[in-house]
Length: 571
Image 1 (cartoon, rainbow, N blue to C red):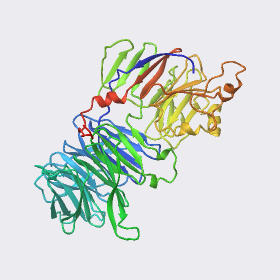
Image 2: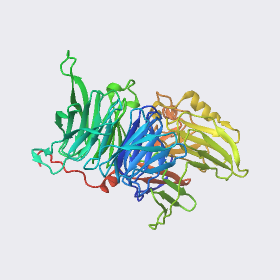
Image 3: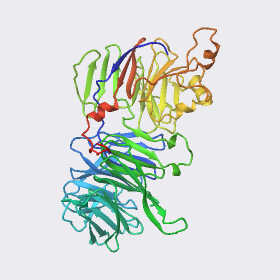
């Protein structure tokens, strides 16, 4: 790999916003995530969990609820009292509708996807009809005495459950009337609390309503009689979220202590047809409150104040035990937040609402506001490559201001791309860790790229779970491609052979002389360093100098509010 002088940068004071809501779409296998700053992200779980869409937040939008309806339509609602729909093609807010009930705390789409419910600050539950172009108010349900903090539809669409402060209401959808009011117990660890907040409810097909509350309990209710069937005390703090599997054979809850609990429906005895809910697995992957959870067919998904999106596979549901069965913890955006001016030695840092421009060796910052896109410009200024919401890449002739060519379509989204100087070859990285090289002048893949696709990448390279976010080139070594993700920096030497699955991928020693036969046999194109991490940016300033921008996770956690203090044995 050679020796470089490295500017090791740790003054990029980037702190991701906490996660407020997640919503899983079973039809498209996509996950929508909203953060406390109003940002909404969409992850394609079929494309190696890549963050394929991003909607910037705004300080006036505090999202409290997120849901999918009619397949591919995404809605959010929040404390500004508005319901918003997102345009997933144009990547903007399609429209916003005021619900006229004050801040909105909860939202749920009907099982058919044609109706939308919202729960408001004034105690009202409002029903909206989803039309092809917009949503239309239909009617109010019976108003309750306190805010509606959680909602859930019965799978038949005939009834709904609404969680509030100290009670749960069951409504008949056709009449809009409350048919049952179930009072929750304020007792917590033998002490009566002033209020018990029902943070989440789930309505099952058999009429059971599952609730989670601020007293640390998971409770099961009979909606036909309005009575409590069973109660589990699982935490010394709030249980804040719940999500049920589509088959209704398991559910997951998240607590303010950072623990996620998994419940499963199991037979009472080995030969019995009768089943009961049993708490089977606790997971501690968070340091702070777990504000939201989701349940996909093969994984438990959770997020909260510590900013991590955690995807925990259910091993019994994963058919092939490969890298898809590994725990994933997503912290940083799957896009580049840093740009570098090599000649002037400047770094541009992108934050949520401003930019900071730093000179290496200086401590003075200036800021402005500007939108960013996934673009690549050739060093001679003749070519511009652009990647939109789809996986396609279009190359434009800048001087003639027209489309030059389109790179052949690929099934996975683009995560990074760059145009090599001198050759004008476009190097593209995709979310499945494939890397392509496309000749812009010849409008075809290069010989090296065809060789790569014929032989294939090393299996360890393809099993990495963080996307490549930046690609660059060595000014004096045209055969070198430099790229990185959050946990490794790599130089690909196209003059060397590709590694096969039997060779060592990480850091084989280069040959020291012509007689070094063993090292020469193991030398291959990939030179990888894992010294710098989490790595948000790395690039060459000149042929012997690198700049690396890191953001240690401990620095982020230090800026978060303190978690709930737990008493440990012996203290």
